[in-house]
Image (cartoon, rainbow, N blue to C red; front, side, top):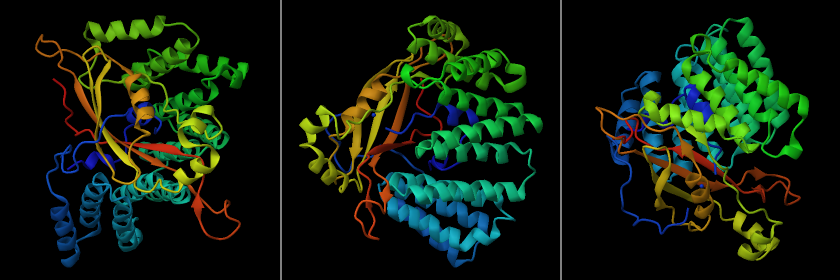
Length: 405
């Protein structure tokens, strides 16, 4: 079972996660399987029902809930997956003092599915509940408590509140440093640097850019203090910034270093173009969607619009053979070409050869959901409607053992 979908992400995974948004191929037949799980949807439903029938303890309840909710999510039943988790939260919220890790995992998963549904407020509150649950049960210097605060700041960034996110990273870096947790402090500083050096030069504030570069430079090579993964992440972030300024030297050095055998079996992302959906005001949007009125009509049909994509990462870190493996019936997958453009632009670290043989590559499977947040501000009434601003959410479906060769 793909238990990794809803588990807490390690710091390096959080840092290198692609902003949600990436191709156009015909969808595979509806009955094509792309994910092999240990138990079917019917089996996980039966497991959960049996657990509840015997009044199983909260940790077992949560485990069965997450297993079934993951199956529901993979099948595209987002609302059912969320209701499964909400029901478990109603049963187990009062047990968070005894089972803080399990209940916080449930809250985190609920928030992730809410984001795919466009339930921005529910996503925000779920992340806050997750953090507060851990903070109430664990010491303040526990890395899980501090990492949860990173997720809170990430959620603010994801919802468009960059200033709040930046303040969160700064405060967390100071607190983690004072508590003697340098890895979390470094991670927060990397996140802050990503905000302080926006992609477009016109948006950059020179003093912040200079401070961010200095901060990142200070972390490069500090493997013994912050860990080799975060030291590498700081270097990758610097490479991205320098590459946007036309300097590819650091990127070339990184690629050469990994190609020489210092890589890992699991490739790390070095660079990627974001998913760029056409804005409603752009000529492309008017041409493709018939102008503003049709764009708003499209937003009304974002329910159940998802695609599962697969692609190979070659031994040299380049993406090939992108294809849409499955898509939801509603709404089609015309927007998948924007996902394709983003995924095909990615450059990963070369994959280390094993037993002296060249790597056969690494196969990735990802879920992308086209959505728009619900709002109360577009009808003049209390009836909710969708924001006209489309966005894309991403979830990694790659099996935990990967497909490297």
